[in-house]
Amino acid sequence: MSIKISKKIVEYSVVKPEEKAAPAAPAKTDYVEMHEKLKRPEHLEGCTYKIKTPTSEHAIYVTINDVILNRGSEHEERRPFEIFINSKNMEHYQWISALTLIISAVFRKGGDCTFLVEELRSVFDPKGGYMKRGGRWSPSLVAEIGDVLEQHLKHIGLIKDEIDEHQRAYLEQKRAEFTGRAAQGQADAECDDSTQEYPAGAQLCGKCHTKAAVQMDGCLTCLACGDSKCG
Image (cartoon, rainbow, N blue to C red; front, side, top):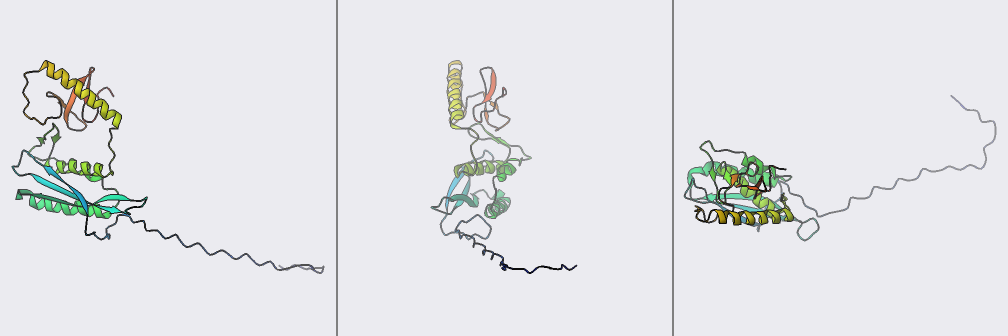
């Protein structure tokens, strides 16, 4: 298709297309995230936890070392890097060695590692569990390692405590009140464990598996996690 121009074109100019601006180079950042290729620093900060079970005369020591990422910046973060489990009892050496390698690999992979707590807690010993010091039920040694891991992840801030300061103060007050009532009514009662943290006769809580559920104000309430049958 052609167009016929019958008049002379005057006062025209060629308009050049605007040159596109070159894309800005991405800003350089020193922000470091946890990943499996991160080299192990020569110095790591960590904590060691002691596990003493009634099924063994030897204690188990769990050490979790952390790496500090982006130290001194607004992105500073503390992440678990490796775990070691040691004991004089060599009965569980094989599976404990495998467990430490797998958990450490998950730590170094990056991302969310808090799921390990529930995975470990879901392991039940076919021989039966045991009651820990303080009145908490543990279904297995692996589950207790899960409890230690949760304690450490709370310590470094990766898991937030479900009970806030006001709830904790309320539970402490209720525990003190109940202990006072129990002392008046059971002055001659004996306690098998001097380190027991909750009143004697408390029931096992179905949520946190701690023997700390008592009748308070007509309602069964756990003095450890705050779970209540009344909602």
